[in-house]
Length: 287
Image 1 (tube, one colour):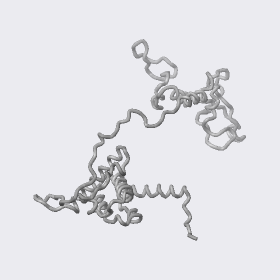
Image 2 (cartoon, one colour):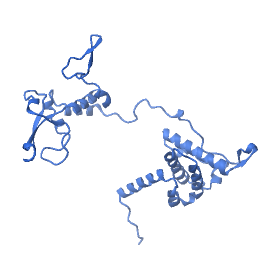
Image 3 (cartoon, helix red, strand yellow):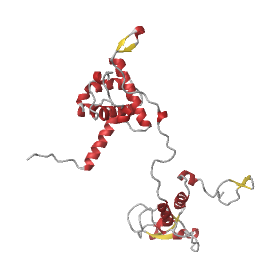
Image 4 (cartoon, helix red, strand yellow):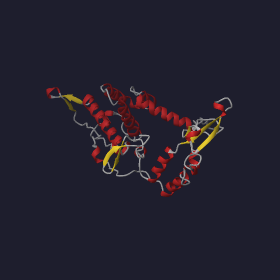
């Protein structure tokens, strides 16, 4: 019988991939290449030379190198000898189309690898010509062309599928179950722990005094919360604030962002108000 090694649990494999990805993005010495792909030793040496002369954008350069080494050279089974890979007689697939995402980052990664290969060509596959300028040796070229972001497709709307309208209508009915705030039973207990249970207190329930509530107002939602006997007399009077849930209801009715909803207040506390075509002082008691 053949002995099989136990496989790692799924969670451990995911954690290992995450750890490896994080290490590659911050490993300026490319030790992961030595560990996983020792056959890329020559390319690693060139990459260390290239990285040594850079002072910014190190994270992006390391990401681009990881894509070039693993998703391009290794997965596409391309020649690993730099002199063979960079030879004009060697046919290789297009780097961006093969290994990069169709996004602005894909263009950036492509151009970073173009710069890296250009560095390798000028440093190791060039000769000193007239005026002490480096001249590329005959028979070599850069197989990765520099690209422009102008060719990327422009999306005029979200690429995600819209939420069916039936769900939005159902959410509105669940939230605003009646014409008054007392009818919004689901929202009253949506946040925070229930009374008598451990956990964070509900952020929409505020401690008030008896004179601050109106027991006859259907829009005034209040409760008496029981506490321990030795704490604040054993109970506290609280009023429910509907601000958060009214804002959510507005977002379910209108296509607005939260920041836009937050400025759509009644203006009762504003110093100035606009009326009859001109600005005038707000006479409200809370202004």
